[in-house]
Amino acid sequence: MREMAGLTDSVECGSGIGKWYRLVIVTVLGLLLSSCASNLDQGNASYAIGQYDRAAQYWNAAAIAGEPAAQYNLGLLWEQGLGSTPRNADQGLYWYYQSAQRGYVPGMVKAGAMLASAGRLDEAVSWFTLAARWGNMEAVNNLRVLNARVPAADLMQMRARETEQANLMVMDAAMKAASKVYMSTLP
Image 1 (spheres, rainbow, N blue to C red):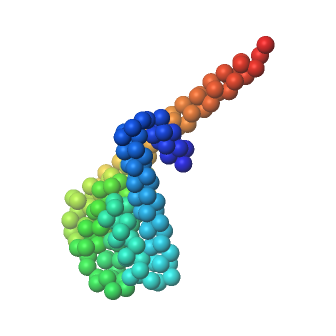
Image 2 (image 1 turned 90 degrees about the vertical axis):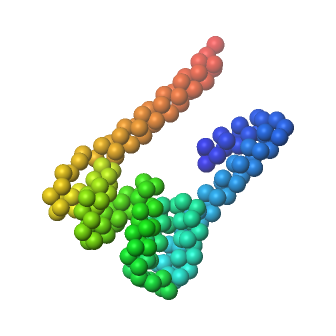
């Protein structure tokens, strides 16, 4: 929310056509993002109570908008043949690929598992390796079963370092601001 507030603040500082153009872009982007989240959540709720066709409708909308968790969930529907969705491993793999290509680790693992089952071991190892680099233990175990090299969880470690660095920068800025306020209260 803070980022959105920052975007809104910068939009209000603009003038003329540019101001309204940025406002429209921010509004449309916000609506698209909230629509994705609500479609994903509504799909999850429908799936939880066994309404697979309704879940598919919600997830299709979110998946087309690029939501990797919805793409993964569609893969499950196709792979398992739930509701009126016919069982189709190729369609399941397609949606797992879509989610994996967007960086969704469970999609990487599921794509790897389906590829391994189909005897496409080189491709499976590639997906398992990428998921293992994100710290996914199922992928690590699958690599061990395939007697493949298990990489370090370097991507997960890199993300942790980036997060730690960002947190330190925020804390540093907060300390500077607090110090400035404190100094302004001194006689």
